[in-house]
Length: 302
Length: 302
Image (cartoon, rainbow over all chains, first blue to last red; front, side, top):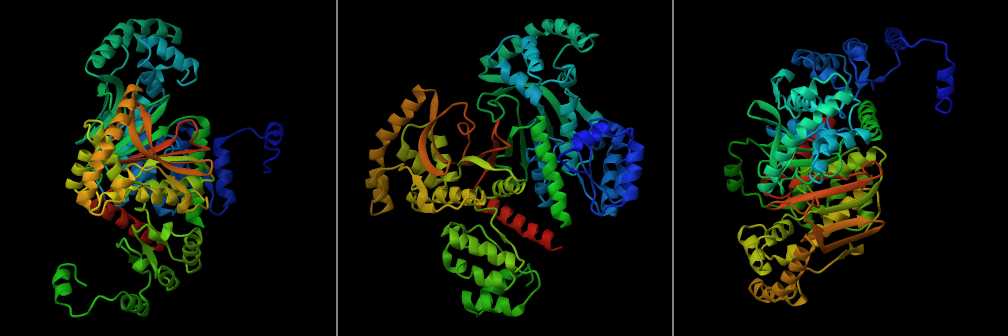
């Protein structure tokens, strides 16, 4: 396909989009060294991953689903890729293009061992709690985050912590530790009333009822020379996402905008943890990370 | 050689240590996939690098000398390694085992471009300026750093900034930019009197004369809600090491102990820079990084 006129070609095509046919066609063509790039966020392509890997086609994806289902299916993908001598790359699963998964892979392949993982893996939650340092109303800050396009269409998808829990799960598994999503404890940020509201508008109305409680937590933190932060943590076989007070000098306390951060304490990095920080979300930025995974596979193949 | 009794064997050996003979013997043995690990900090082994690479032997080293001589000799090593299909690895040249050089190499091989590099690459200077936040006497802080074994036997080797300038030079060159050490401007931290003292004891006596000036700088910074920091920076073709005021919320302001930090602003990482932070010095820690380079080469060879 010529790059210059792909859009016209696509628009004028009469072929209906059909995933099954696409995958069959891909397998029939038998191009050497093919890579499938799955840029969806749902499980319709994920269901075919094993079949695709068995056809000796590598996969690159920002989609977290394949890595956050059961640990058995996590292992099955790796074994299938290995058996068919292809690669499965998902460097953008955690903190987008930041070199978090690749650094963790290096740590483990050097024979080091993870003692503790801590991080803020959600650009949305990072933005909300960073903004809360300046503003008093939590619901207003969530509204600003939505207006800036930093949240999902329904901000509860971010506030539930599920996305951040999935990312922590992936880092735990990459550390060589079998773990299931259901074993990550997630503290509630917002009340059940707000979480269960029928519409997004109703959610914002209910959210105002949380403002007083969160302002009190924030003021209590301030008295202790701390700030409020929502942090993911794994240590000693336990994983938890919690709303905590952190000291103003803590590495996580002075993030700007929607920055992500991760801190690995290991047998080698014991004195001070290894910390990676930076922009961890955004379509452009994720595209950079996906391209980087594709280039890694092509370097490996060449 | 058996690992269990290497020390006895070494002590009982009557063979004199001789670098030329060692290298000739190594070349004669023609072991496949050999790697020479140069753990010296002087140039006696470096002089033989080209000869070793030409004998198809890879090199791993924490030694910065080969990378900080003229840009021509920097290029010559790379061309020789490439021609003879061997590797030259020095991941511990900057920030010890922290993944700084490897991350920069990935950034560049992804087609990204460096806009700005900033960092604190000296564990010694990091410790001194971190401690200065609590204490008022600069000379006392330098004395504590020496007593803790954080400085070279002569602390002026650290305070001159030369070691940190070399590390900045390596990062600039890894970014694909031809640069020479002499073009890095290094601000003086201490007075000429202290720098030129005849002995280390005399140096410490002279250093007390600097205390008042540095305390004034520190107090001025404090009035601006800032702290004093010694930072390496490359931007727009200019490289400089300077003693500057940085805001208390700056990512470099809250380092602990002797932590290193580096910040890469690139075309892709433009919104917020990519920051790596952690322990960046120490013999154990450097050994981890050297082993990691050896493992990278053996993964490549296998």
